[in-house]
Length: 427
Image (cartoon, rainbow, N blue to C red; front, side, top):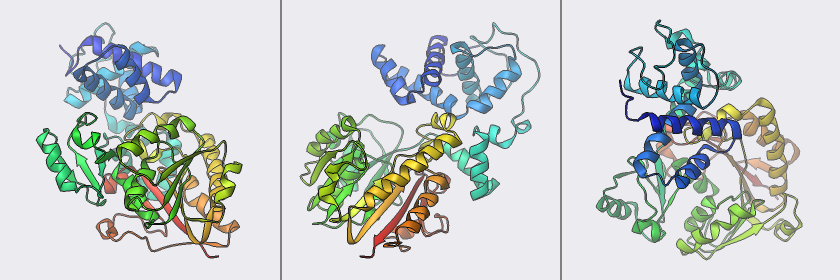
């Protein structure tokens, strides 16, 4: 019997890559990219191997249970990961407990059916127990189950259109001429959602800077900043600058945006993106830490400060499923302490009547509400804005949890998970 969609050599590669991801703790996408470059893999091989690797990363626990049920003598290692890839492919193809193909035929299988409903719910949905419990406390069991299932699905590919220079419909037409289908994102007025995972890097709209890859949820964070032309804005944890680019477009490239980050290498990658987008309002400012003296010249003078804080990234598990297997309560607490320090430092830059926007791609209260409430308790000159400054927010009516803050849940919105709080300085 052949494997559904893959040959044994590709399965072996998938097993080796999975073993490398879990043994090195490197990001899965980087491990795969490096491997494919070294082996000069074509798009078909990349697609098949990448798909099964991510399927195993998303469903590791339930696949492990099924593998151990049928092959209790199998030991950890690349061979076991390859076997798990086979189990994932068979589950997708609905093959159930039919005869096992290579590379599993060499092992003695237990001839008894495997039933998912025998597993506890957190293992059935492939979530660490502590993460399941935390979300159940906040959302309840049924919604946690829906959330977990949504996070175990592949993410869509969203792009943001530069609305200064074109329209979504014009770019959609250009992409259609290239055989790439897209639809308008339902919530962001700047976004397109692509069908499949097409390559755009050589396309004319991308080369002209008319679009950037950006999840729809991330696009909405840019709108929450509500930066107006002529303002001075700081993107405090800018990274490679995706939100800085969006803010520059929303401000009609008039004003000044400081893209600030401690990772000089990531910040450096913003420069060619600025040129491709034909933007003049962005300046980069590398710092060593949140208390760097380089920030002193900006204190008390910034109209909008966006803190897209480093976090657990639990809202992006559709894209980065390995994160859930590496995150622990202790790591979460480390993020919390770091976020509190960053938010406090960023608040010093805000001008009177200016706004401080705290955002994460986390779904954990410890990184979101707890950070904001702790900050507000110690900084009485700030107060939260309950009314969100997005004119088209009506499309999200009924999809956001009741809260003074902004929370996108992937199973409700089909976006990555995001949290945001808008805090205004009184004086």
